[in-house]
Length: 195
Image (cartoon, rainbow, N blue to C red; front, side):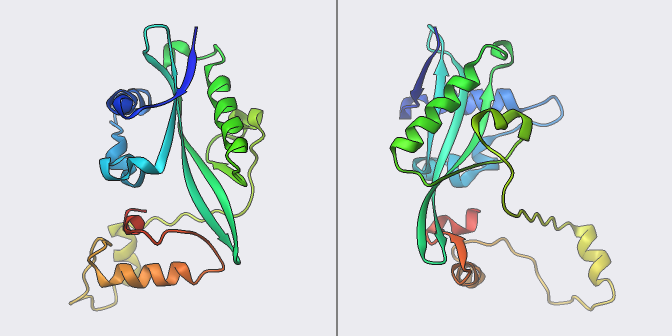
């Protein structure tokens, strides 16, 4: 019998290993604290609730995380949940485990007063739970090749690319620009530069 429960602090290493095992391939190892430090680094683990499906031996066979975000929609504050790390062990797929975990996450979210739930993924897979594409999405990828071809005729002596961090004055400028948008997620905490 499968049980769905919130992961405890003591489960952290188990669910991180589970996620790594499920999402990694022979070509690429996915380490969630490195990939998503704003959620899975030890200092940020309070940002997400991890729901785990466990078997009779307390082995994790499914996982879904939900991270609470506050959306400022032109002054109206909305409690939003971003759902991620949606996974089931390969040997347990097709047994309804994901349906059970997602139903629990959605049910708890309604009880906890969430206004909106968001998740990225395959429409056909998440349509079962009422999720559908909405809004606008912009993805920007900057590579060395992009930069070279865009500014190769410009003298770049003296221009440096530095990682945005909380000690960097540019981080404060980026946060200022973010906070002056009409629709924005509240990201005023020190984790802003991790996003």
